Length: 474
Image 1 (spheres, rainbow, N blue to C red):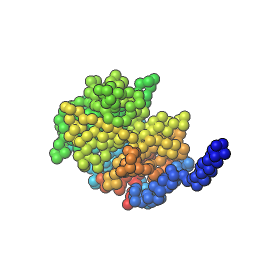
Image 2 (image 1 turned 90 degrees about the horizontal axis):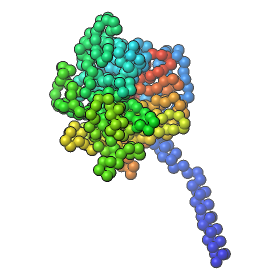
Image 3 (image 1 turned 180 degrees about the vertical axis):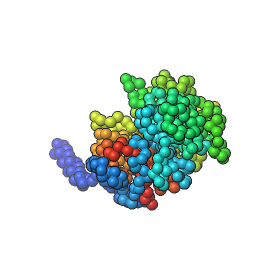
Image 4 (image 1 turned 90 degrees about the vertical axis):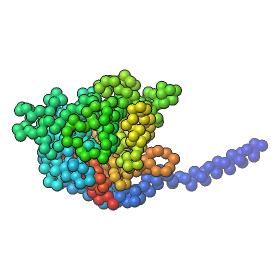
């Protein structure tokens, strides 16, 4: 018996050795990554992706002479300079005007202190920049066009952040905002101020540190609080605002700010966990089904803690999935940067499904939201910040914003989930990397064709605003 057992053990050991030897050179994950890159033309509309993040940091003289040198792009993609040297130095998010089909202007936030330029319009053809809001905004960050023909812009300013609505942006110039009130008083507004009554604060949506904003065609607004956890209090929550009077997508653009759906409505906060009568919420419940909780006060950060809304690590930009919207459904994807340092790469992209467009706007009953991961961070791809949906292909272009990554900040192009078993993106490739250790990609937005991508290179070595237009997708 001992001999037989020894023989069997030897055969088993040898068998394992043979199998181990055959598998020794196989790295299935790397093979899959290489396969994705080899299919980049079909899946992403670009040539060979960028293998590694840039380690370079060019000098200001080189970048001033040719601002496109700030970035290296995947094969087939090309960058042209929209503006350089005349726009405000820290252009963040941008909206296309008068529409995404044939944009002529970028309406852009400048993310600086309240004494600095807040909002500008940038002529796409000439690069000329004109100031809409000259001062009074603290860290203007998000800017979005609404379905009813206005622009919203808001502050990334903790629990004090305000959201404003702008009508007729081409005829509004040099306005100062003091205590939430737009004014043409001098000082502090610049001479030649016009159209102060074209801007109004939208108090009904509440106050928080605004970043991501998205609208459904009938006017429901989704947004998040760029907040990190602190001493056991969860990080930033997600909210939706349901207007008292919904927007009819068939109507003409409004001509008066008093007709905006943002005048009045109700705010709801996202809380995940429906088990045991909707009581299974809190730490550890970051995905799955949930409920929209009515929010009683307009200090949304404090309300999130009181109502125990689901918290994330610094929610950033978000955008609607326009293919889902065309099908009559609400789906949006957004980034949570995660914590940087200590070998943590816990940034993530999540997607929120919220029923049909009609269900998402209903208050009785409220829709049932569902959150799932799209991308989970790793050393090469972390600190997700801005996100842009690419019409036509349905891919997501995700911007990095980190100071301690393995290289410079990159642009990633990510597929949606396919028919495989998991719900994650079917893969991402690096399509851009910055050649500037001080800079980050911000505010990227596609036109309606999905072939023109406008993006800011913020905090770059030149010290002034640079906006690029990237083209070349096949």
